[in-house]
Picture (cartoon, rainbow, N blue to C red):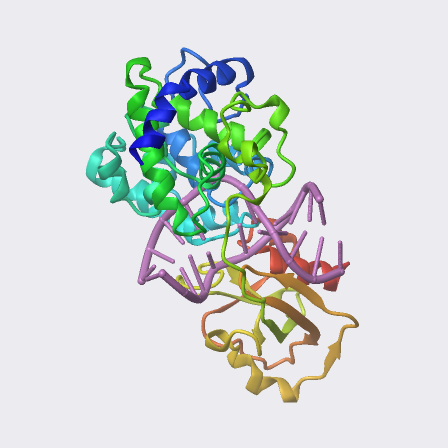
Length: 357
DNA sequence: AATGCGTGGTT
DNA sequence: TAACCAAGCAT
């Protein structure tokens, strides 16, 4: 380990990286320009959105959130549903719930001011090891070493680390920390983090990395061995189970559609759904019992949606509510014209499209 | 440590 | 097309 540490220092890796970053840094909406002071609220918001999510996907959501909630005080004061609706389509909805929790905690207990230390940030909802280090480094220029998927890949290749994921993460963290410490005189931990992420996103890509453009092309141990495309190594993935279910488009005379809000925890927590059954045992609709009395029209085809851990195929049935129909508890009628302002996850938007074309 | 948790783009 | 992958977190 100490040998690799020395290698890092000897190859002046940080200088090469920062030189490259100064010439090629990407302009991103949440990124401060050179000389500007980063806004912790914006750094935090972007980091939460960027968890497991690409820059291209995040951009419009980030802009929308800043428009709707310009400060952490605006966000903390917002109704839950406004935040869930603004987040709809971005996925991993626990992020939105924790975002709101975190904003309210900070506003209530700390006057809306973010703590600057990695350890204090780590205690906040939705902020884990990566995000705590990223905010500390990027927003406050603390000597923190965030390790995301990019940095994990970049350093695994630079140092030819063959440990498979997920164990690799801890190993990379120690080297990333040494890297920042070795560069202490430059005092640019935030730029080091962003430079390594930019490098991973644009050059040291998972497939077909563009080594010819890499500032570390002469230093990369993996490239030297010709194994750069095989790193990082990972355990084989499990096959994705298939689930099938039925979703009901139940319309009343006003043209409104029956919906309900899912429980806060678990899959699609806090988001709006059409009644359904057969694929998510905990959320089988109580509507099932009332349906035999109603004439149903089965729509041709099906809606297919792929979640992280299973593939879902939904048959869609269309029904008209009879005159004396009583909606089950916790259900509400929503008119399709209000769908844009409804917290509908993508799988439900696919169902809507399937029905309305 | 392993699993649950979205979605859309790329290959 | 099916598989892979993306600035991870909570439990």
